[in-house]
Length: 167
Image (cartoon, rainbow, N blue to C red):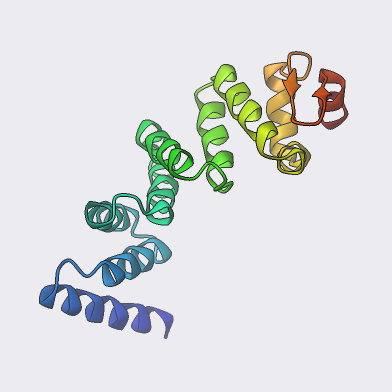
């Protein structure tokens, strides 16, 4: 039943695009439908098409980045998440994906760069990241805990603060 509804929706979206190919609402929904149904390449194409019309839409760029990670196009995914964080530094959803990319590429200095950025936003955000099991493993594997030294707006946060998350 779900497959039938998905196919029906896809046909409606394609019909709508045949009438008005620059309808961004339909393009976005079609891209999400392709993504939801596991058709990653088609979803990527639709998000890229959407971004042609709305180049500053952080949600579409973020979704494109997520799909690019799934097809192992890490450099392009990094560009997407960097663009999102440039457009809106407070769009926290992109940071875990950047860290995931850097972890795959073994780029410790880039992980540090993100932590430095996060601490300027909010210690709560940084604490949330550090409480995640995957980040504990990353910090341990990269021997980052002893190197972290950040200045927050309120106080200096020493490496010992981070050790409680990684030990």
